[in-house]
Image 1 (tube, rainbow, N blue to C red):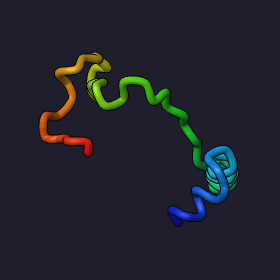
Image 2 (cartoon, rainbow, N blue to C red; image 1 turned 135 degrees about the vertical axis):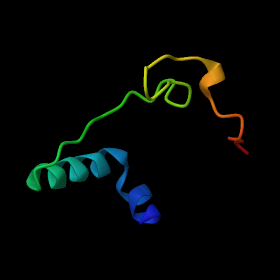
Image 3 (cartoon, helix red, strand yellow; image 1 turned 90 degrees about the vertical axis):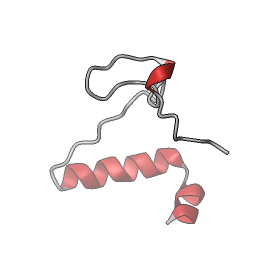
Image 4 (spheres, helix red, strand yellow; image 1 turned 120 degrees about the vertical axis):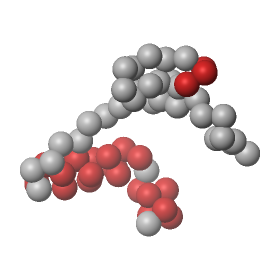
Length: 58
């Protein structure tokens, strides 16, 4: 599936996902990717300290 996503492009993937969700009664919710790793999922507060110290990006 990963290769097919890269081949189609993100716009096409989003368009197909939106189509299939609406066909089955679902809803596609787009989220602004800014600060998503630092934003608290409970209260919405954004701070660098909210990022888990266990997460290491290599």
